[in-house]
Length: 270
Image (cartoon, rainbow, N blue to C red; front, side, top):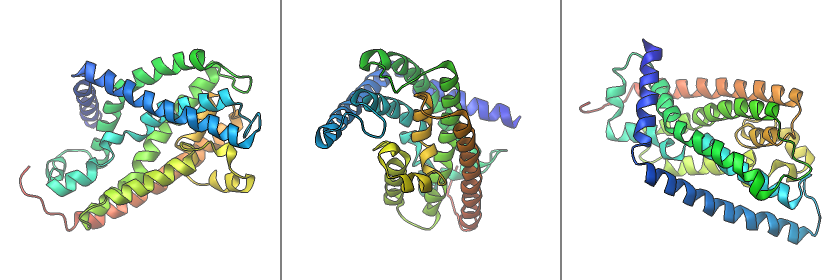
């Protein structure tokens, strides 16, 4: 019964997202085009400033392709439109109706997020298949069926990890009047240290060694580098274990904050 409920929540959200198909495609194409333009100029500016033919093992074309995949996968990881959903439910009292569900509130909200991302998966597959032919595949990139499969597994864990990392911050809404600034700050840290703003291959060796014990690289950098064939099977498996452990830590923290906040929550109406 609980799995059926979560499935219904996800499918309902997916159908709702696809209700306005024209708007859905126009907004997505516009956002991808703007991001691609910014990262295109950023990549070429980095090479122009350095005067080098390669940076972090990337040629100019390889870095542009990295950013293309980072844009597409980042949309799947972040689910931007829903990342403030929990705090908003607390503020306006919508949380009350979820408390009547036979499953936990975080599970229901994550099911909504998965449903919202289902249509974007179609876009990511379509644009991701076309991008290598438009940008070109440099010699340092090796995309294979195995790298695609491993990347999708990393992407699924990254989406869950992103949700769980943001959940405790949103639950601060039980006490604070506004948590938007906290969410923005956390997103910036995750984008910078996760490889969305800059490939982690450009970081010093000592910084990368530290970062790979933290949750951030497994949000963006690892799924993208895995897809591009720049991660070995051993590195991928190790990273998946570390990311899963961080999911457990974040979930435990979120549960602890929830228990404290739920004791003082008051809602009017359903």
